[in-house]
Amino acid sequence: MKIELKDERLKTLSEKVQVYFRNEHEDPIGELKASLIIDFFIKELGAEIYNQAISDAHDFMQDKLIDLEEILYASDK
Image 1: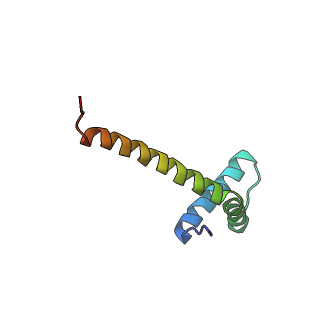
Image 2: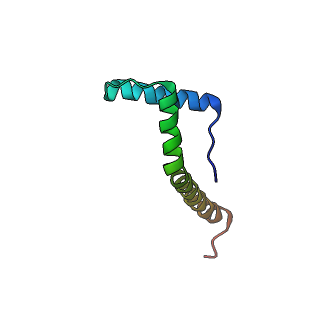
Image 3: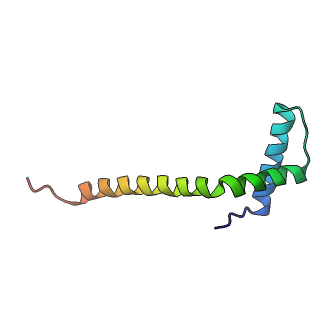
């Protein structure tokens, strides 16, 4: 699976990476280098983060379905 960001989102993230390097490392970087860093992290971590998010969403929905079953079904007692 390939994760692609919309141009506007990539630009926003690029700006944030540039600010981070300027503030935390006193080493300003340009838009190209920031984009390459983002691409690297997406390639290396994107699938793992995506899969964890899907797993978390699944667990959340599973809990809600259990709650819904308790609400919908009348007690036999």
